[in-house]
View 1 (cartoon, rainbow, N blue to C red):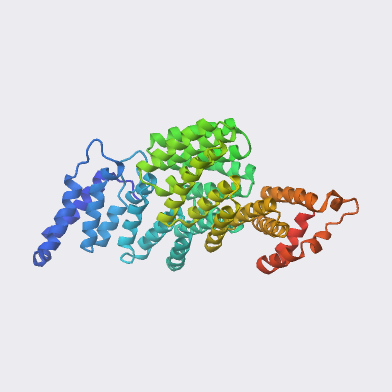
View 2: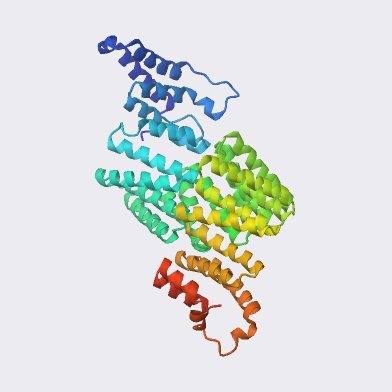
Length: 502
């Protein structure tokens, strides 16, 4: 987009409206149509937000004018307003600024109002925006539905930039649903194409998303390298949004590697930057990260303090998904402190928000959290009910990583209850998923638990000197048969190979 000031662009829109009003053809139009043009012009020209206005109130003039133009079916002028740069520290366009501020509902409304009324290249922008916004909400099935339209459009218009964006959307959606190998393939393709085209902005995005997926796979050195590249390029381009995201992602990586000091340093830098550019969601993420560092060091009061600050912020911007995440973290912290009643009530609030917003992934995670809490207080039947319900949702949305976590937790409960056959089934299913999507750390944890359980049930003599890993083929015959049917022969054989490392 051209580097044009917000004032100049709005003056251009006002000029277009004035021309329309003075066009002789409009003298034959209805008084209603004239009133819509006048209202649009007045909202742009005369609206002045109060000094204490919220972010949303500061752009009310833009939003109201947009809707009046849509009433007139003046789609092109409304689209111009959608792409108007806003006078903020990041100078983002109207629709992107709404995303940064966390106003996802308003953002979706803009896209849907215009969808189906614009030329192909502009329709692609709308589909891209809808896909990314619904992804932020966790509505992955909806994202894939828009991807079907988006993919056909990208193929038709043969636009390399749109191809990059489309691959990126598929990449982050595959990552969100646990398909990490596919996600990396999409991110690597978009990275190569963006470098070939010299599109540094999209290259930054690709490095960031690639690093996040590498982190999920436990490839922390690779993730660190990707995010450091993201940070370097974003700093060069003065892309402060991406710079903040890179700092936050590096915080996650260092935290995962046990380097708490470095993690805290990067989260604090992210928080300062997010405050400078009024990136409210970025602030929330940084606060959660700082809270997690304190949690991992058993500094529970400090962790709760940061989680509560994050919760306050997300409630101010009415970002329900962020509120659900903050409540979930608070629930976990209170659980570790032994305050199970508060933890359970917070977990219920987390679940209610996820169900209210239709965020299936968040709903499953909330049920998973409740299941873990109920297991802790020995409410095993209720814990099983929550976990099975979460498993059903993860299966519906195709989240393999989530399914693996649930199967492992179900195995823990069955181990406590003495349901040995169910233990083998649950942990082998979890192991199969870890093997399939490349989660080596989780696979190792499952193997450790299997070893302990086998020693308890069969005795340590099970692993005598003449032990052969091939014994697992017979011992675990039933679950391996199901794994063969569900995941295929290759995964079943890889599970056996992994069991040999026990």
